[in-house]
Each structure stands twice: as structure tokens, then as C-alpha cells.
Image 1 (cartoon, rainbow, N blue to C red):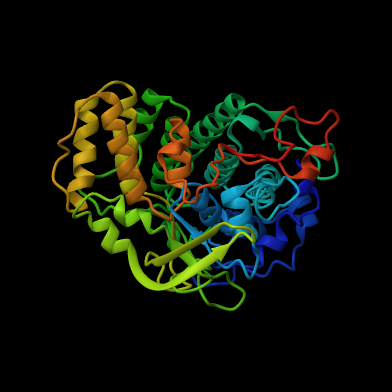
Image 2: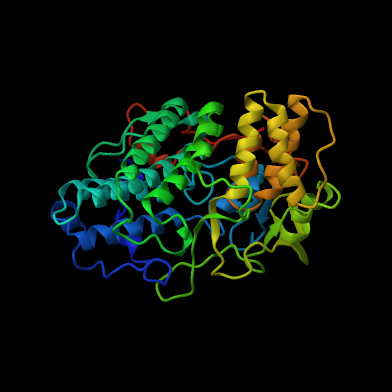
Length: 458
């Protein structure tokens, strides 16, 4: 595994958060991690499998978490609470992204690999458990590999050309895995998801463990396979594998007759020991980019449905750079509001993107216009050249998926269009990737050729 993960209590520490109505996880003090790895029982293994969903949501809806940091780099919004830490503005807008700071520039790593470590523990325990049927074991394999692939997708999404660690099935005290290339990482993600699908197809009618409220309607092996294909489609689009994306979407839960909100979610609650949504409306000086309003097409309901005026918040870098906003997101009204992992609206736009990548502009516009109509806009009336339709697609992905998972940064970077986004300040910087944490670099001899120095931006 990675150096960061080796000092993480890989499973039990993460799972203790899961004592809520949404993720009903049993007492984990008996048995412990050692017995889970060596002599797992069905109860302990099912508890550990459910706990992977707790690890999956770690660091997602935090003031310096996945949504907030990627959202800042994609100019969706920002955390202006610089009294807490000036790096919310100083580092995320001006740079450089600091590899020594696992809280900012080198974030989105430790929690991801801790949960990847959890998936390997579940997979090994599945091979050793006694008292479970073959179908139940297949369900565990399919679920764990899907979660591992999604976590790797988050890692490579943030590191891009710097690469990621994919050799993760290593002793916790052993040497860390090598840094794989971007291409190798996407190949591994695709393989994991395809292996998982095969397992899910042999998993019978029910999982042996609970998936909780965030996977309502996707909580049997056959239904979860649709979630697996949704993640496979997202990964394929990010990797320009357009045909594979369309194939996966055809097996996903994409449905233009269903609500756009249909999908899988991270769930939160105020229950004892559970995690809350910490990017909710009205707290932490988390603000929406006010330029979202002036940049929107007239009549776009996504603006009024997702943004609202509030008192002006101001964040300063400590130098001459100050960012202000009088707009906040209304997407998460309470600290128990769920956060999307992937949902129907994204899948429809991914299908448009894949068709556009294949040159099927007419088909792409069918899905783009479906989303436009749902947002109160008429059919697209601009030029039907590929570049023009791409700009329209990116616009719709930006407003449809605001503040859900850093989609603007990921999408505009994908097409080398980050500078099409607002620079925000005269000296504002764009970043195409995040560095590795310093301890990951120090653990390797020789060190990786890229990703170990500050990202200065452009």
C-alpha cells in the first residue's frame, strides 16, 4: 500500500462512524481487525462490507474536502473562512499547491487509500470466511471491487498526469506500490469494474450486507450492477473511451423517464457517532461563485434552484487577493442532506458526451436538449459544430452538477479549457493536477519523476 495508508487503522477506525439509521453497522470491538483478516465470521465480514460506504464518504462533504477543493479549482464556489485557514484562498486560488499539506494541495489521497486498503481486507476475508454461500461471496467481491475502482477514479481524477498507486494489495508494513501512469490507472479501474460486474452477475438476488438509504433502488446485486456500469461509463468518458461509455450506459440506471435525482448518494445524519454534511447552507462561509449568475443562460432554473442571496462573505489570501460572494448554495439545506455519488442527470449528459466524442452530434443534442428542457430552457439553437456543441455540453454539466463532486474542474480540464472558466482574481491560478503528499514521495527511492514538487499553476 501507500505510506499514508500504512499508518491508518485501515478498517476499524473508519467503521466506528457507522452507527446510524442509514448504515446499520454492528459493534466492531469484537472481533478486531486481526481476526477479520485471519478468521473472519459472516457477521464481521458483512459489517466490514457495509463500512466501505463509510470510508467512501470520508472527506467528501468537509470544509476542505473533495467537493470544496475541486469546486474551488473549478470556480464553482469557495470556502471563505480564511480566519480558520488562509489557504482556502491563498493556496487554492493562487498556489502553489503544496505537497506537504495533506489538508489542501495534496489532499484527496489518504482517505481514499485508507478505504482502498479496506476493500482489500474485505476481499481477502471473503476468501477465508466460512459459513457464506458462493453467491454471497460473489456479492462481496463485486461490491468491494466496485468501491475500490471508484476510489481509484477519485485519486487519478485529482492527480491526472502525475499518476496513482494501483498495486494496492500489499502488506501494511511493506514497501509502497509504485506510481502507475494515468493510462495504467484507467486500465486498472476498467478491469476492476468489469471483474466486479462478473461477480455481481453470480451474486444471487440479495446481498448479505446492508447498503443503507443512499443506495435505495440499487441495493440488490442486479441493481448495484447498474451503479457499477454508471461508474464504468464515467471512467470511460474521462478516458475518451466513447464506445465503452455508451455500452456501459446502456446497462446502467440511465432513464429519461425517471427523476433526474435517481441515483446513489452519500448519506449523513445527526445520530450519535455518525458523520454530518459539513458543507451545508449557511455555515463555514461556504459561498457560490457569484459569476455563476451572470454566466448563466437566461431562464436557467438551475440557478434559482441551487443558489440564493445571503450576506456577503469575504476571504483574503493575506496579500492583495480578496474573494467575495453574496451567493450561497441551497443544495444541502441541513447537515443531514445527502450528497450525490452519481445520478441520472449525469448519466444522460455522459451519454451526450460519448456521442459527441464519436461525432454523433445529432444524438448528443437529443440528450443535451432533454437536460435543457428540464432546466426551463428551450432547445439549443447555436452552431452544430463539434466545438460549439462541446461548449454547450460543458455549460450544462457545470450547472446540472454544481457542487456535487468537482465536475467543472474535471470536465474543463479534460478538454484543456480551464482558462474558459473565470480566473476570479487578476493573479488567480488554474491547476491541472494535484501533487502527491510529501511522505508518499519520501517513501520511494527513486522518487516519482512528477508530482513531488509544488504545482504552480498557470
